[in-house]
Image 1 (cartoon, one colour):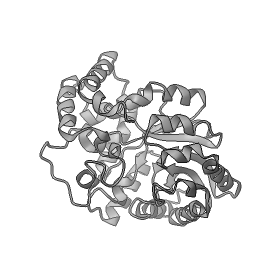
Image 2: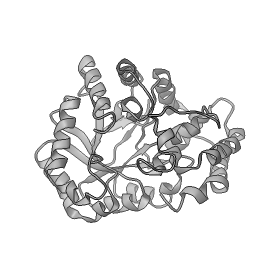
Image 3: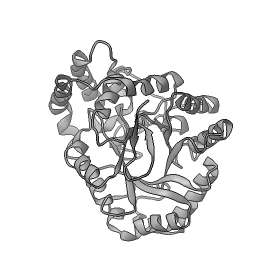
Length: 329
């Protein structure tokens, strides 16, 4: 495992981390022990950056992480980033600066068994919240109270990311970036690097499309967001299949397949492609399989992709995906 500096935070973290939305909720039924086994597998694979949120299974993923860190005595060895604010309604942008945010943080501290959270990220607040300095004053207060050590944001759009890093308290930005969502590389990565901002990449596999494991006629469980959020019915549609129409995503995957090096899978190529961008601090694939955790971690040791492969990925994006996502996120 290779490690990268997390922006201005005085920590090097594993460049392949673990996302825990999958083991919390909205990905079908996952029993508690399976969820904990995923966290155990991550630690065993030298992954020391784990991302979670208070709404993943109503705190379930946080509790899984806290349980395993207690079990392993590993609270000081793993950097856990959580998120808060999704419990507020979109029209409550002015509520990010009130006591409710502090109460969410207190609940996460209890779930994780931490006196001070390593990193608290605002969880995709509405765009108007980024234009209210009071939103970020609240993060400063949480730091002053020693409830959080560091602060960041999880964003939907490049525009939100660029606005967020205008505030000194913001040390990290979590954003969707993968071969189907390439816009962050145009301007945001340059600004992030200049401002010493840690970049956390989520949804690397486009909800499974970029693993090559999904069928065109795939059926998803009723409680799987890939079933109930196809058109953005529950939250931003960009979180599901990276916002790419499902059939179009399969067409793009078919076009990518001939360019996957012989010794790699499509999933390997996807993670390696992300890591080949030096602005990225860590990528956080989620899974319900300990075996997949190990294979994800192994990508850290792979050589960078060739310029030819990078060019092919860009060509496929421009031909199949660009028109659906580039202007939106």
